[in-house]
Length: 151
Image (cartoon, rainbow, N blue to C red; front, side, top):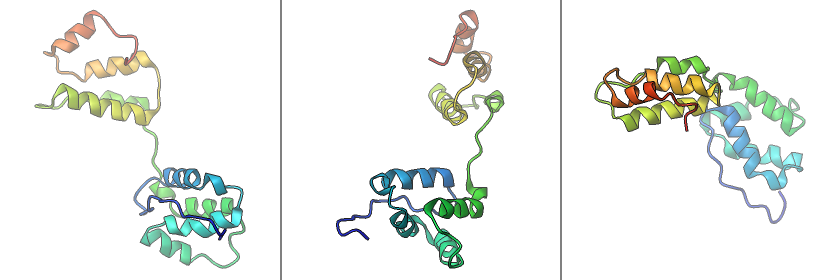
C-alpha cells in the first residue's frame, strides 16, 4: 500500500444489489489510484460484504492477473444480481392505485421512467395520462391539451 493511501468509504457489496453499480462506485472512489492495478486489486475485497468476500477468498491463486480480470470474474459470479433495464412498455402497466395520491403515483411513474433511461417522450407522457383514473381532472386536462413530453 502506498504510504499516504487512505481507504475511501465504500458501499459494501452484499450480493443483492446491482454489481455494475457497485463496480462503478468502487472505480469512482478509487479514481486517483486507477492507474495502480495492484492497489485496485488489493483494496477491492474491502468493498465486499460477507458473501462476496467468501467468493473472493475462494478464488484460485493465479486465476486473476489484473483488475479488469478480477472485475470480469466478479461479474461472472454475481451476474444474476445485475439489474435489467426496464423497457418503455413497462410504463403501460402503471396505474394510479385506489387511494393513491397523485404525488405518489407521479413519483412511482418517474422512478420507473428514470430506470428506463428515456424513450419516446410523447408515449411516456401518454402512458402517464392513461394511468390516471378516468374521472381525474388532470386526465381530462391532459386529454384536451396533450403534453409533448414529461416536463
